Image 1 (spheres, helix red, strand yellow):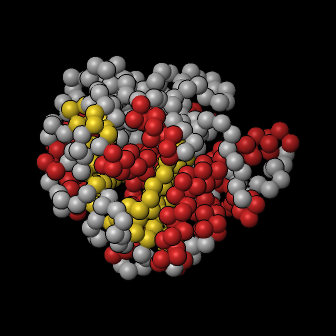
Image 2 (cartoon, one colour; image 1 turned 60 degrees about the vertical axis):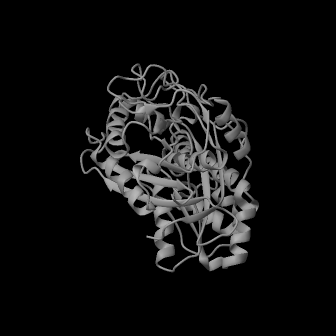
Length: 390
């Protein structure tokens, strides 16, 4: 795999803000974006919902206009200039769009189903291929930016937007592309929240990763994007390596010893050409479910030891599902660029079974390399190594 692919732009929008600057300012200030849901639910919980109204899509791609598409285009705005420069530099056929999502346009399909149940007809303009299909957002972005390179979407639940970084690196290694817009997007909908309620892991309060009182997750929405280019003289920030693995254990529970998660971290280190002592920070998947946090901490201990500071940002944003991995990647890039590492919000009294160094206070220091984890149902694991080459 190509080592050290430069990061020439990134963006994120989520419950903490409508722009990348707002999101990162809230992260640095320790401000959570979690609040009450914007729609009625038969269960008490808090969610990470993007504040305010979302702008419609441009008229040229109006047939793709859904909440998830609006969120994706909101994130695109902050990285659009860099994407345009990449297309000018490499050519429209050499720039890929690789996205991850878990729910696709499910919110639009929910609304369409309710309309059908009440009236016997689907709403005007509703089409499965443009409103629900997972690839719809990638197609819409390609039309707007003018890219004709590979465009596809990966859906492996919560590891989706981490895995697209590996896809981009493989395509570069194969000589197919020279740049890729990678990332992920998911939006809140009732089915997702009811599904996690059915699993018994939806917390009524703000989630508390690694805390001994943790009781489950909060769901969030958002998008994070990152522009990767084959080479650049304008940045020392890179995706150094991506490690992937599969638990092959259970459809909804992590392998208890953290074997698959450990393998993903070790492969990321190997592909990045770094050792465990070179890692300055780890952004954990850290969902605040009892099983995930215990298994992940065991994996971190086995792969990295107990010294590296560990942070979960789920209490800032909620669990963004298909956007989670890409959001952690942006937070990792921000930590390297600024030297600021956030506190693991909500992690007050660490579970004695968690033997890693969970950071309960924000710090400012030299940070050269960060690992960012994203783990998913079905045991799909990915770890990104982001920072400056050793």
